[in-house]
Length: 127
Image 1 (cartoon, rainbow, N blue to C red):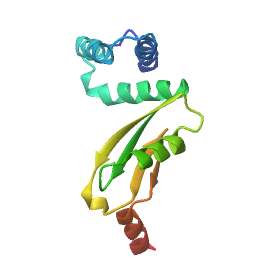
Image 2 (cartoon, one colour):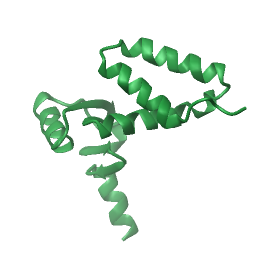
Image 3 (cartoon, rainbow, N blue to C red):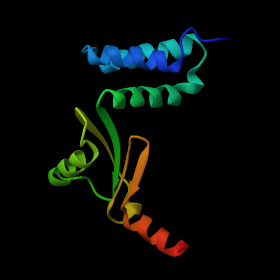
Image 4 (tube, one colour):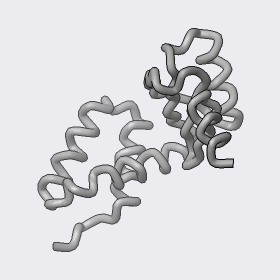
């Protein structure tokens, strides 16, 4: 069954609605209903990635930040500045993973920077 709209068009529509001030929960519920109605739920991750890409095109950056311990305000501000040099707005999705030992892993705009102690140890072992 062919979908009436491409993922890109759906992502643009969702982002347009979010930029117009629509509640994000409502927008995501409607996206979920659209995917369910068109039997495309298995592609939800691709739709989310397309929405994140569209947000990035408009200057809104979503960054996943993983640390061994919760971020403090100073580090949160530094990471926001690093990720959002040219951005209108940056949102950090913070994750804690004690296996990192220390340091940080930042993923944004399709790139990942691993400055964690566990990542450094892995790189040293392979070299």
